[in-house]
Image (cartoon, rainbow, N blue to C red; front, side, top):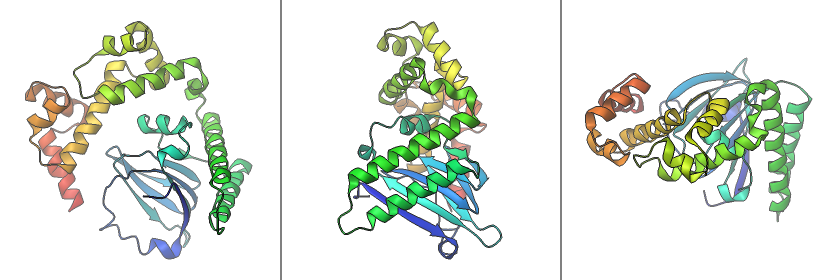
Length: 276
C-alpha cells in the first residue's frame, strides 16, 4: 500500500465476490482495523481460527499472517475497513499491544460507545472523499478511534488493565527488544539486563500482563516466525531452527511440537494442504 491511509466499506454486495477458495492466508505491509457492524467474520490469525459475530473490532498488525472471511447473517453484512501505514500514527500503543497479544479480535457492545466509533469512521470517510483531504484531521479521528476501542476493551477485560501502568511501559520495551533479538539464542537474563532490571522482576511483569513467563513469550515469538517460514519458504526444518537460534534440529522439533501439537514437517504439510 502506497497511501498513508485508506478507508472503505464492505457490504453484502461485496461479500459475494470474496471467494473463500481464493481468499488465501496472507500478510501485508500496513496496519488494518476492521469494525464489524452487521454479519460475522471468520478470522484466521497466528495459526488459529474463530468466527466472531458483530459488533466487533479486529486489529491486524503489520506482518501478521491472517485471513478474514466476511459472512452474511440474515442477509446482512457491513464492515468498515481502515488501512494505514505504521508511520501514520506511530505513537499509538495499541499497535504494539495487538501485535503480541491474543487480542486481535475485540468483541464490542451495541451501545453508545460503538455508535460513536461508527460516527468517527463516517467522518474519516467523508474527509477522505474531499478533493484535498486533510490527513491531520483523519489522524486525529483515527487516534480517537483507538482510544475509544481501548477504553471499551478495558471495560470488558479489566484484568488486563495493566496497559496503563508503568509496568506496561517496561513490557512494551521488552517486546521491542524481543522483536530485534528473538532469532538469537538469548534467555531471560539478556532481556532483563537490557532493561536494567532483574530477571525476577521482568518475569513478574510478564506474568501479570500475559500470564506467561519471559521464556514462554520468547518461545511463542519464535514459534510464530517458524510457522511463517515453514509456510512461505522451502527451507529445511533444520535451517529454520538454526535461523531462530536452535543449534539442534531435534530440540527445535521438540519445542515446536510441544507448543503447537505438530512437528514442523507435519505443520508444513497441513498448511500447504489448506492453502491448496
